Amino acid sequence: MAHPQIVTRQEPKQAVARASAMLEGLFDLRAVTVKAEPGETIAAEGEEVETIYRVISGTVRCCGYTGGGQRQIFRFCGPGSFLGAVDQDRWRATVEATDCVILSAVPRCRLDEAIARSPRLCRALFALMTDELRHREAHLVTLSHLPAHERLRVFLTRFVAERRAPGFVALPMTRQDIADHLGLTIETVSRSFGTLKRHGVIEMRGAGKVRIADQTSRVPA
Image (cartoon, rainbow, N blue to C red; front, side):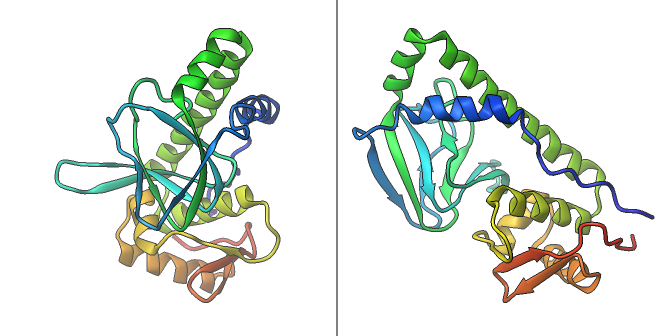
């Protein structure tokens, strides 16, 4: 059985690029630099959005927790990502540092003032919100229809493509992070890495660096 075709996330690039450029204008010399250590909470779900952030370096995870403490990671955001810009009054997810993270921060009121002056900025934020919804829909399809090793294949392919780096790419997240993102156990994630390596889909350098070797390789169900 052939594996599903993997399509890396193709945003309406021009709209997203314009939106990012407009938001970057808010992060001028008056922005504050914030550092977060691995596992540190940057913003908690349900808290009032008082600050918006732009990721300068490192990776953050956007996640939710059940009443029993179970975690679901919705998305990993790397350099250039904006946090809090498309949330309304309160954070829709908890934002945590996956590794050592540096962010640029400005008060949310500056964004609100800019929106009042610029209808174009409203359209730009809508483009970013649409992109985020598109990402979540694609992730739901992955969780609903693919076996474990294909979920991991899709995740790694998208992550490597977003990093736009040749050769081996460092994975800043733990195996548990990946498990909580893909709806799997950590044991299943480890087995799936082994499956993809055996079939030549990926190459690993240690436990923390990966290269997509063959996107077309078939893995038996």
